[in-house]
Length: 125
Image 1: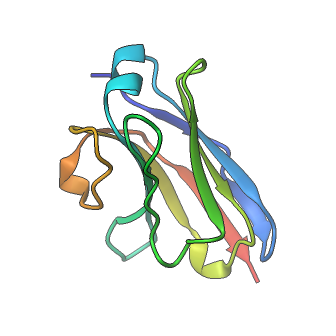
Image 2: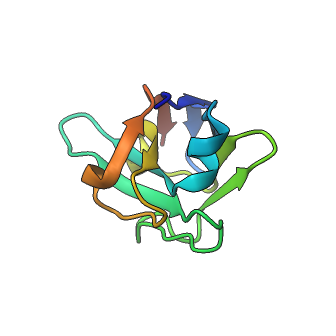
């Protein structure tokens, strides 16, 4: 299994937008499994943010980001995206891309087989 590689994080102000990217170099892994974004703030547990199933149809979100974040994928580039709009200080965290063991994007991190190193998002008020 390959390790996902995230990019796109940064320091922004409240209300700004960012787009995170995650490249999974194995076409097989990218196409055959669900993918997801998680985040972890200092002193807190890693939490599910958004997921996308293998067909790219079902896209669950955490209640805290619903309506502000959008997950998508580009199969031609083996790249998973997370568009973050109307960012809030409470969105500050390290964001991780993960490849599921299954075709559905479960919210529990234990169902994910490979993880990237993460990309830091910091939102100032």
